[in-house]
Image (cartoon, rainbow, N blue to C red):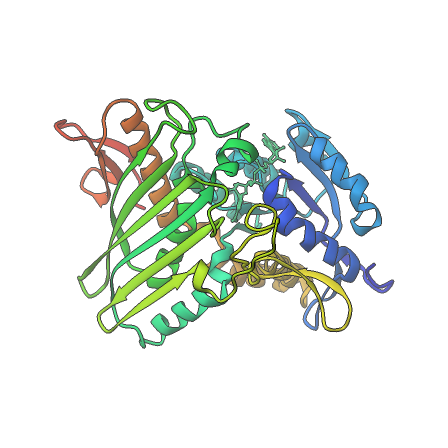
Length: 426
Ligand SMILES: NC(=O)c1ccc[n+]([C@@H]2O[C@H](COP(=O)([O-])OP(=O)(O)OC[C@H]3O[C@@H](n4cnc5c(N)ncnc54)[C@H](O)[C@@H]3O)[C@@H](O)[C@H]2O)c1
């Protein structure tokens, strides 16, 4: 429970209570319910989860029953008007963790109602939507932020530190792969997977990592993919995708990055979720592999299906602390707490008259602000458009960024007329 002196509160609303809620938002809200949020600059702040909006309400109700006093007694709304009802409860901020093609509507409604928003990756699927949300956030003086928890992974922080400090000089090429088990596409996501692809779902982590770590200007996006397991071999639902992004830097030199993703890897694959990156520099190479992070665990009859062999204890682990307490912690939760701290800083640190200044300061943080998500959204929009054309019988399209036709332009092999996906500058 928060202390009796706590007068300031950030009332939270939640859209979507699926897998990612359970892994990260749940432990975050349970912890702040227990301990509040404290910083010398803003004091003791409560962060009650007051209302939630989901499609059916089933998991929300089950969680509420199971959690009991571990969570603030939130009101659960389900169905088509659930977001509006949740907003009517009066919330200061809203976390959007519904499937990615449903982020925009909920985030827009939240900002229009005057709430700050935090959206799961990828923030939105089109730059047109990004523009609308960024404009709304600015006109309403609200924060609009996106969760890319991999930026808080200590390994990725080290990579960025070495790049920033010029220990690693000029990235030339890189590849990243993220393989999800079949149970994700076949079970967990069966409700919303038609027409979707694993690239938008997880390549966006690496798109952002590359964009944020190395900077530069995104120039070109190409992509292909495979079908036939999750859906028909000629349908719009993808088993795996491979995309390439080309960047140019201030030096005039280029770099190319390949990102491979799949959500049809066998469930008993030892990595379970297998992640690998390699970045090659003028003077070095960075190799990261989830199975070489340090721990491989075997428990007879349990690994790899009930328990993972490669345990990522940094993302989101459950622990018995040395002082006897049970905890759940990691960068997947830290990234949410960080947002709540940024918001508490804006609202409760110092005089109200200075709030616009603090708001501008927090909006300038490019790791999570929607305004700084342009190139990442552009890459996702290009990937989606290329796969859509591919499914419609036109494979091998190329998307170019900021050329003479527009901000994001799709070129089809053998066709003179390009398709402008976004006319403004990316
Ligand atoms: N950061 C990560 O590594 C990570 C991991 C998994 C998922 N995600 C992201 O989180 C989001 C959700 O993924 P998930 O794995 O929790 O999915 P999920 O399918 O497990 O859960 C989706 C939730 O959204 C709700 N929902 C669906 N349509 C809705 C609507 N119109 N209005 C309100 N609620 C609605 C469902 O009821 C469900 O509670 C996606 O954007 C995904 O990309 C991020």
